[in-house]
Image 1 (cartoon, rainbow, N blue to C red):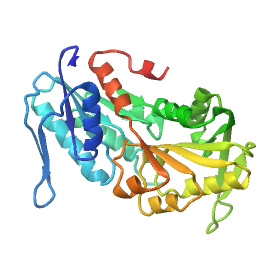
Image 2 (spheres, rainbow, N blue to C red):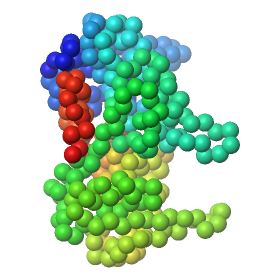
Image 3 (cartoon, rainbow, N blue to C red):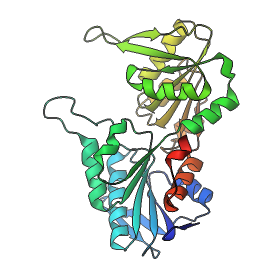
Image 4 (cartoon, rainbow, N blue to C red):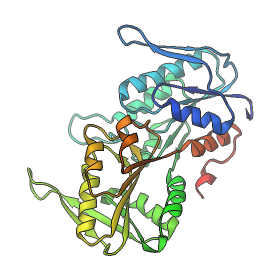
Length: 317
């Protein structure tokens, strides 16, 4: 495949090399030879070992755990490419870390998502491509073109293959995720329910109220990030207590920090389906009720369209 003006190069950092290789396979492109290593004091060193002068370069790097190391890798790779005369550099960030810090939550607190956007821009990126941003307005934090892709086509395809659509109900685990859940529900023509969670007083556990009649339905929880897994487990318990037949969850980014994987496997959740925007750990791979969907075809198609100056948004029409 060739870009509209010059060749395409695909560069991978260390955050998710398996996804980068899968994207390359979809595009029929080998990964560009590059060294991303650390000195004895953990300082990051990058060397691009192929000619990229005049090329349209896509850097695949999620800023997942360890977030700061992977972010710094991304910035240094971009700088190396800029100094090597790449024609255009697109930062492909399947999971954009710091996205949950998109506003000030109290006095003297940062807006870290904006800071990270500035760092990526000033490092030399000409464009950003990411997947299911935690908050859509983060696109406005960048002063360069930003494509926010959606995992919903991948999820919808999997749902159609594995479920009886006549008995499905899509559920948003909180009020803030209603737009995302409604969008998926519309695609499969399913009804929508909402979990209203609130903490009545300090020190007491959250009370989960279900808005909608879920009795007899197979419920699918939809969200962008699962981190500790606590909200997901509590939501599944609340749905089952209200008569749901089974509860599944489709979540784009499986952060799954701390004891989240153990919490999910011990829960009443029938299955958690995540994408490979974050490289799954061994614990996630062997978990009996966690399954991974590949986004390599989606990302590969978006990269191909960007390189040939075609519409990316039409992927989701």
